[in-house]
Structures are given as C-alpha cells and as structure tokens.
Image 1 (cartoon, helix red, strand yellow):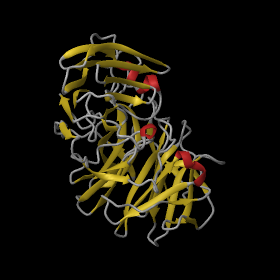
Image 2: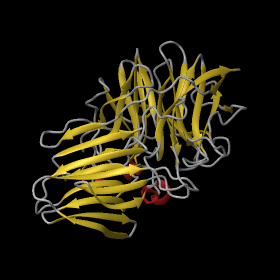
Image 3: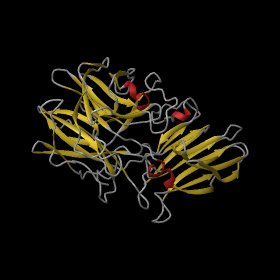
Image 4: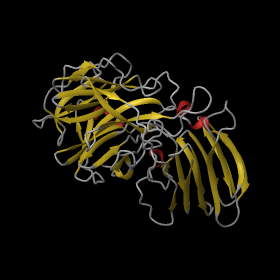
Amino acid sequence: MAIDTEPVIPGFHPDPSVCRAGEDYYLVCSSFEYFPGVPIFHSRDLVSWEQIGNVFTRTTQFDPAGVAPSTGIYAPTLRHHDGRFWLTTTIVNRIEDGQLIVHADDPAGPWSDPVFVPGTIGIDPDLAWDAGGNCYLTYKGFHDPGGIMQVRIDPFTGTKLGDIRGVWPGTGMAHPEAPHLYEIDGVWYLMIAEGGTERGHTVTIARGPAPSGPFEPCPDNPILTHRSTTHPVQNTGHGDLVRAADGSWWMVYLGVRPRGFTPGFHVIGRETFLAPVTWRDGWHVVGVADRPVPHRDRSFAEDFTRAVTHPRWITPAASAGSGFSCVRVTDLLWAAEASVSPGPEPSRLVLRLDDRHWYALVADGSSIAAVARIGDLEQTVGTVPASPGTVTLRIEAAEAPHEYAGPDEIVLSADGAELTRLDGRYLSTEVTGGFTGRVLCVERVLLFSYTSKA
C-alpha cells in the first residue's frame, strides 16, 4: 500500500497532533467520551507507532460521568517546548470554562491536572511560543468575530496576558477550525482545516510576519484535500506539521476509508495518515510518498483473569465505573473471541459504535443471545442454549455479500454455531452520526483475542 492509502495509526484515532523531541516523535489523538482519554504514541520513523499511555488518566483531569457519545475531549495539540511536553484541548462538556492546558516531563505520564483559560470559548486549541518565550493560544472561536482566535497566555496558570483577537477567518469555506501556528525561518504560518470533517474536508494555510498576522492565504489553497475524487481515503484534513531530525517536513492528518454502496460507509472511525511536505516559493506542498507502510499484524490476546494494564483499553462514559472494557477496532476485516463462563450475571462481547448502535453476544446461565441495537430499536435476533462450562463468543467482520451491500457483514457465533449475520452499515458513522469509530467491548470474560485479517 502506498503511504497515502494506508493509515500509520489505524482505527478510531482522529485529529492527530505530533511533535518531535530529539530523535523521538510523539503523537496524540481525540478520544471524545472514552476514559482514559487522549492516547499518546511514540515513534522513531513517523510510520511505526506504539501507544505508550493516555494523557487523561484521572477524573481530576477529565470526569467522564454523564458525558454523551461524541462529546468529551476534542482535538488536542501536543508540543515540546523548553524541555517540557505541553498539551491543550477542549472538554466540550465544560466549554464555558475555556481551553485547558496540561503538561508533563515524560510524555508517558503522569500529566498535570488542567488549568483553563477563561473566556476562550471554542474548540481545537493550539500552543506556540515565539523567540522571546511568549506563549500564544490559538483556537476555533465560537463567539464574535468567530473564525480563528488568539490570545497570549501564561501556560502554567491559564492567565490571559492580552486581549482575545481574531487572526484569520479562513478562505471562505465552512467551519474554519483546527489551527496550528508555526514559526519557520522568521515567518509565521497558520494552518487550519476547512470544509467540515466530512467529504469536503481540506487543509489550508496562510503566512504572516507575526504570530497574530496579518495573514495572507496560500495561492494554492487547499494544500490537501481528496474531495470530489475517487481516492480510497476521503475526508482528509485536520493536519499538523513536524520537521524530522533529517530536516525533512511531514504532515499527519486524518482520513477515512469508506466502503460499500453509495454513499460509502466508514466504520472504524477517522484514522491517522502521513504525507511528505516540500517547499515551493515559501509555501508548503503536500505530496504522496511511495515508500510503503509496512504491513503489521495487530492481533493480540488479553487474559482478564489477571490485571489488565495495556493502555489500549478504554471505557465509554455510559459505563464509567463498571467492568465494561473496550478496545478500538484497527482493521477493516477482523475476528474477536471471548471465553466466558456463563452465570447469573451475563457475560458480553459487544461491537459498539455508540450507546444506541451496537451488536452483542450475551451469555447467561441458560442461553446465548445475539442482540442488535439500531437507534431506538433493540431486538434479539438469534439464540442457542448455553453449554455447561466455558463457551466461546465470536464476532467477525467479513466481506460484504455483494457490491450493493454495506461496508462489511458482521457474523455473530457461539461455540462455532452461527447465530446471525448483520449488515455492517448500521454501525457506521454515516448512519449513527458523531466522531468516533467501532470498538470491541467485553464484560465478565476470562480471555479475549483479536485477530487482524489482511
């Protein structure tokens, strides 16, 4: 696969932000209603990434109680400045508190409790420092005049050190957002997303003499988009730039891989992609790299009879405090199995997009049921008697049955007996709405395994 058709971080990992510290690269993504929040990854080559933790691991940082699907933590920005790692983001359920900032000496954590910047009502904040050490918070504003807003701050306390001002309205497309501000060879570049995070998504850029501009737009905007093309990766945007140790420039950005009959359905969320960046006449040019993303088998197993410590496991806000644990789906085709010992309290293996859209296998002491929830409708679609002892629950994403079908077919089985096959389009963002992707969830299981299928 060429690098622009294969994600470097697959599955529900949207709104990537990246920074470099020496030879090491670190990257974070949005996490919305899930806890712990904001997964953080490490790489040495910008292609192979390993999750090293989560930024928000304490309820004093982010309390998920009562948080609805696709709310919670939006679009973080990660930066390394003066030997310290900084992250700014928005908890949309506390949007009136303004943008928040945390910091850490080690990107794997622990991270500080947040400070909020009062009056900065909006989303998608960014941090940048000038040569004099002044820190600028730039964000998508929701109050007049709207567009991209900026204020000078103390990042340790959240104190504003000047007035909030509008700095750029964008090029005229819908939803100017996701600003990132960079000083490069004495010139300040302001890169944003426009067009919305759906099929019209783009990246645009402007430059100016100071952090606050005035900004002139690039004559070749948008510098990245796949809109109105047949490219297999769509919705491309929300980019962030990083300069590699060898001096080359790269952009991480989000995209989706829609499949199935029109309008196309993406099911595992917005994913993180990578593109090379070159320069022409003082402007960024986003290209296509021909070096392949190495195929990676993302299969793994988890023993729930022991303490589970891998940072991949998260819990949706609706299940906060329960034993309901989830993991992001990272492949288009896959299989998951859970070994359970059915008892009076049911064991579950669930494929979830949100709390109103999921397919599940539910095992109690007498039966195993396949249950489908699609919006307001919930129905048992198949049952088998429960065998004594341990049983194996299996959910598989298989190829769609024909070209006019959805993106895939979800097969639910118990101890090798198929209970049902369900259309995968009903667990897609195009049906459910929102900003997340599929996760696999378990409750009261002994062992769990996930198998990637090429």
